[in-house]
View: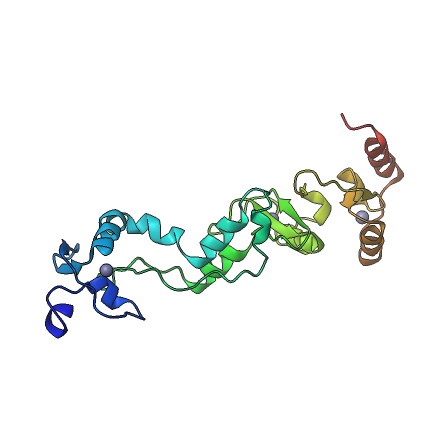
Length: 232
Ligand SMILES: [Zn+2]
Ligand SMILES: [Zn+2]
Ligand SMILES: [Zn+2]
């Protein structure tokens, strides 16, 4: 298009940007998969040579939600802490080859939303859910601690029944430990005690879970004994 409207040697890729500035001279030509030619400036020619053949792998990596999860997964240095939970990731589209008829398929909105599930947040206490999750979610799956019981209900056992929170061995981030444990309920006792970080959280659990079956004496004693045993 640039060929006809402006000049035979302006960069077609730069011209396709939503806020394309003045035309940039394009000493290079490249051929798209459909056999059509484009004129490119030096930097776009470099980007084209590297990214165009690999765009099916590269474009998914650059989706804002993926970058968001990727930044959050960075290991715990102080640098990582600089990314607050709601850091707006720039949403400008990368300069996809606009003249390419077959753009990389965009993930449907539902899949994009799913990518936000399970991501690490710096400002909320979270636990890792060790069970498998749907495809399209991040591999290490973090759940807000206060939502873990509800999250557990969404997991189905082999027999189709839901998990209870204590059935799942939720893990706190490294270095953090539960300090208060419920052994009042059968399911809590059977799993060695349902862990909490504060006495208040434990009390809240006791209030919220009044309809959970009470632990047998044996189950409770066994859990208490295990909890009091010095860590191996
Ligand atoms: Zn260019
Ligand atoms: Zn889960
Ligand atoms: Zn309990």
